[in-house]
Image (tube, rainbow, N blue to C red; front, side, top):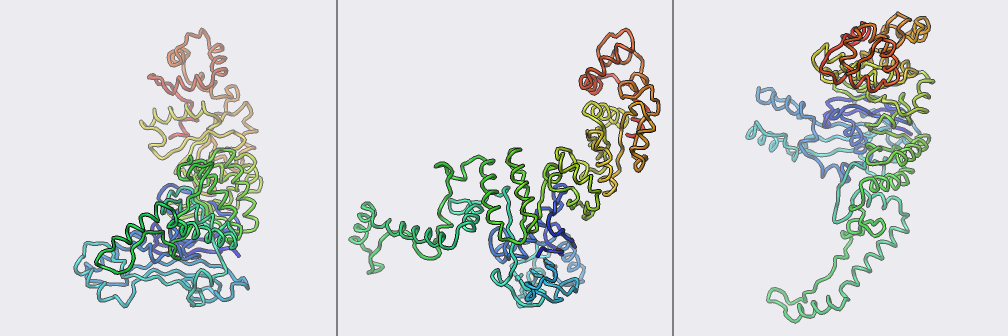
Length: 525
């Protein structure tokens, strides 16, 4: 029973979001501050009623409300046009599974007849007079969310609790370093989930006995005797010191995990991430949706590979939603599962050919995320080509490509078509700078569906970039740039082909300019 759709209004980065989700794997990518983490928080909040590990009622701040909505509301008030205060709406649409019949109804923003959960954070009308008075007195202030209340209910319009919802989520966030009473709150909660009920009871009882034994220690008993003999005038009752053994004082808040006698919070970040991930993955088995924040954080390549394999296995039985900055992660888990977030909204990278999906899964090292996040891209065959195109761009425009929002990406020529399919799906302006390899007809046949993207020279007698550079420049000019004294073009060509990287670096760093081939100039124009 996956989440079919999420609707969000006025929650942090989102003014309005209506996002259909894949039933198994969802890979959320995008630049910073576009709402990737916010989406995971919102989903977890509507399913569990929690935010940052606590009931959401305790986490309401003005910063939760979408700021442009707040600004608009306050501006209307100043103009004498009062309206409804902005409210936060988060909805999870759960489909029509029979096991969720108690949650089914039409009480949602889409009017859909299906099971679902709705979380509202809005003004408590009982406090409307105080709310209005505060805003009249503090017109330039923030939204007084102290007068807001939380409503958590099903699409059937029945109030819900964590126990009444037959649906659960687990969130894994190794980026968090929250601590509470000496223990890592995140890992503590995971351990609590991993332990069986009997194990938790046994640990709680042992912890209580340990605390009770504290007062029996010789030094503590002596202190308590002293206090009893020197009772004050305020109370006739005996004053002693001890350790709180009430229900509010629990082992979860006081015990600290250790790794080889080292407190967990003092272990290396990589080790912490690996342990958190492994424990969380065990706890995630019972959840219907698994939310993962940047699984690549602090992990070695081998550890990340193992983790991704585990996540992939879980996704066959439950829904997984991952926010990531890693090309490896999205390639390994399927680029067609990508949902790109940007300032313009979101777009799903689905409907890619099966062979392209399989290609990136089997060869996950490609910088696909660089292309996905690019405003504009130029694809080249290798690092030496990348350096030369970068220098050509700077000579032509006076700035580096990235300063103009253009990413020059080195791609194995066999992957050009795969990258172009992604660029076409996302409508990313893309140019491919490539050699003709002495066979223009074959080149045109290979890229028949993408000829508008391909930039090359049709002279088959100059099949490589090195030969094109010699063709466009004099021997003297290239000798000057390369700091060489070749007597003829044949010797120069042999050197350039045998030392591609050194040649490209020399051209890139040279204080002297050269003439770049026409097809390169057209690609960067």
